[in-house]
Amino acid sequence: MNDTPFAKLAHLGEQFECTSKRLELAALLAAFLRTLSPPEIPPAVRLIIGQVFPEWDGRALNMSGKAVMAMIDELIDASPAVRSEVSGQAVDPGEAVRMLLERARRQPPSPPPLSLLEVFHILEEIAETVGKGSRARKSALLEGMLTRATPVEAKYLVKVIYGEVRHGVSEGILLDGIAKATGVKSRLVRRANQLWGDLGKVALTALTEEETGLKNATLRLFHPIKPMLAQTAENLAAASDACGGRMALEYKLDGARVQIHVQGDKVRIYSRQLSDVTASLPDVVAEVREKLAAEEAILEGEALAVDAHGRPLPFQHLMRRFRRKHAVAETVAEIPVELYLFDALYVDGQSLVDAPNQERRASLEKAAGGLRLVRRLIPETAADGKAFAEAAYHDGHEGMMAKDLHTAYNPGVRGKSWLKLKRVISLDLVIVAADWGYGRRHGWLSNYHLAARDVDSGEYLVVGKTFKGLTDNEFQEMTQRLLAVEQSRKGATVFVQPQVVVEVLFNEIQESSQYKSGLALRFARISRMRDDKAPTQADTVQTLRQLYDGQFQYKGRLG
Image (cartoon, rainbow, N blue to C red):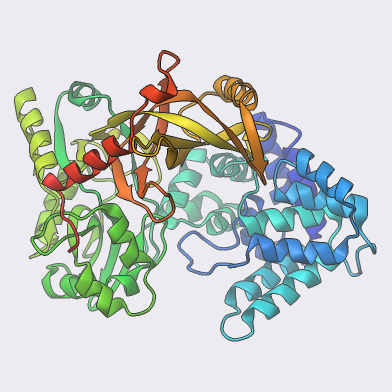
């Protein structure tokens, strides 16, 4: 059996950074995969894109960047000048570690060299180390690897721990590489990945069983798959055109999307990110056990926090339920959650992912029993659609979904078969600070601190941050513009005079203990520059407060 050095994987990462051509990246991947023994294939494939475990696997490394850098400090003797130079040049923490070890390492790497499987098993042990003394044990395991790692190997170890590999190889390119290495059609490789949610299993099957093994890919209970995703439609007419003039409209609830797997009394609930959140939703689990008509099922729905009158609560209250690990019962009483189902992927032995939307809905209605379904309408006229949108808003929801009646369920794909139509709010706000970017945005001020003016004090109070909405050229122009009005710096943040006004689009205003304003924008993105406005003409904190209070005309409110 091969004993592939970890250095070989790290070197592959360096090769990736030297090209942006998709075909070249796929060819490099294919050549590498062919050299691996079967046990090495699953961990290698995942480590290439910064994963240790399949997405549905609940294990996590849980190591902070601060802890990692503390270990690096033990290995180097770097002057302030060297640290400053590295900080200015490194595009991410992994690159910073490589540069520090190359320039200031006290001792050369200790033998023996790391192997690929050894690295995986140590990372696995780190993830499984819990309880008293676990932090010290995790640190000792990582320190043992870093002591033996070359600078380039350490770079990729740190990238994996941070979960930010950033070398140009996406999941899609990785799947192309698997197809190229095996000669199997890319369509089969992608389909297996959609259904298994495990790149390692897909690669191993393709390399050892080829087309025959991949054709057997199917849904598996208690192995969640990536959710089908939606694009945004500008308006109802555009959504209708995209769906060929015939579509289903559904309420878009401002909750958390969940995937529910059921087999008899066994119920597991997974989040949008495929994390197991069953323990946080005991009330939903009990309701599914009591009311579901099917014996086995994989269903999709929305978990929605509601007030005592059943009105939707702001999203941030729901997140308190999802994050809760202790005293769950008390939180259940304080923040009730209602489940609304909108899709069925598997019911009583029958996979439905290839069935059209209309057929899946019919199966859902039969399987749901007494469980709630998301409100749905197949409009006959544009007026029907507009009335449905108004009803969604008056019922406290954030908008609608438009769904093509004839398309299959495409896990992990963001296509035009599902379209979001949200109510969007616009405000003119002032940039008062910005953070230096990293990765592709290295060298740009690209995370902007957005502020509204307080009429009473004259202060510009931050109400949110965003890096969304600008092109690369606009990032560069904004960087120069903000540096010209720089006031001070603290860490990676540059504070500026409140002179640049931008139009900001967002979906909701939330309470915030993080900001002095007491408010925060949700899903903020910059729409355009407002050079025609002076900072004193921008929107005020008082305006935001009025908008925030106005949301509760239709939404629920705790207390």
